[in-house]
Length: 552
Ligand code: NFE
Image 1 (cartoon, rainbow, N blue to C red):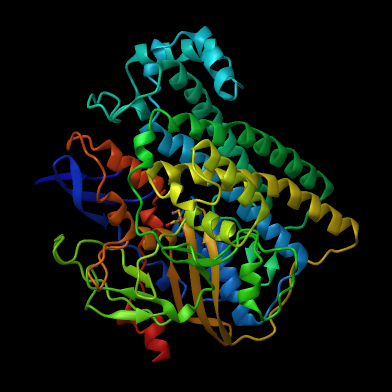
Image 2: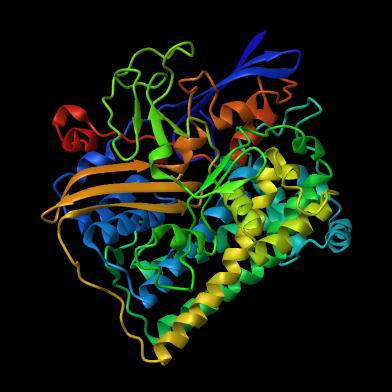
């Protein structure tokens, strides 16, 4: 038995450590530790819900829009507001722009370097690379000769910058397996992706005043007022990103499936999934029927069991357990009455080893994220998702409807591309929908509060998965606030029943040829697209301002 540790994990957001026990070349046990302590919920105490939506999005620079929206939905509910149809479309557009930014950035600029070695591209025959691209249906938007020369100059310079420190030199049979020609083609997409994620961000900035940390979505709707020229710009950018996405993301991921087929055999995780749903549907409004609203989202809500059976979310089944995290006590709290007293003790995997709390649903660990959303959408019969998921299953040699074929490290990586394509398509549809609504004379974007005392929970999705904000408001001021973040579900430690969290379970069974460079473990971590800046939050009971203290 040997220990293998990756600390810090790079090419993610935040501070994450993974410790594994390796036996006979396979991970036998694993512990995931979030090493960053924050305190965002405290900051919004005694402030207005409008302020809260602006403040809580500072949790993260990758998914601020999702936090603004989950907070705004909680505020809408506390204030008794149903937002206008225009505000619904604009929130969808703003959220969609951020999803595209995040998914493109994650695939190409964060995860791909586990599979693609840009320096190996220098061994390529450029003419052959063109032929390989044509044979495999891979997009050619860049001049590969120019890129080859540029890479040569870059390598000769000796300062490898972001390409240094990776495990490109690992020589253990499981490391980098692409031909130099494929490495060259995919490196061209890596560089194009830098522009495309920026373009998606530009859409968010246009709709939100700036990005990250947009300014326009607040309880009551959205403050962005479209003009003809802004809508034109938005449509042009949405089409540009959609066309690039449709050309690249899925074909590129499929190109990895041959050389890295082994990554389809490990990394399953806990096999249970939650999605709260995102992008409000066009049967608007749904009035007080929030469950119906969540089921009718473009990516609908769903809680999935081991057999992909879907049920509706019940808020009271969400709990958080503290016993393995650096907080006082071993209690389990039930939604929305969570509380937290931070209390750092030593890093000890037999006791407490992370700042990440342990959320469970019905007592079980649950995976959040793109795969959960796609599974929920597939089971609920969303046409685009069904069609494209079945097409990908065909490419993987699996039967239509066999969702279990995705339950692996590379499956999780591949299925996210269906979502990227779906959102890229929807962005164009929503711009057109907004234009039609305005042409039809609809100019309502914002509604004032119906009341100033109330409470509400915003169930929504960030790119990394199910996001929950809950608030209690009295006379227009926040008395209690709670957040559960997607990565908190995925990076959760062992629960009160001794069951490992989703990423920990995914790591167990991963082959490790070299404990110094456990690249399959890194691929598995990246397949979850973790963010520890998002994952760790506290409400300090000692101040008397936590949700639990107020309500009990
Ligand atoms: Ni910091 Fe976030 C997303 C949220 S995940 S990236 O997506 O919520 O922890």
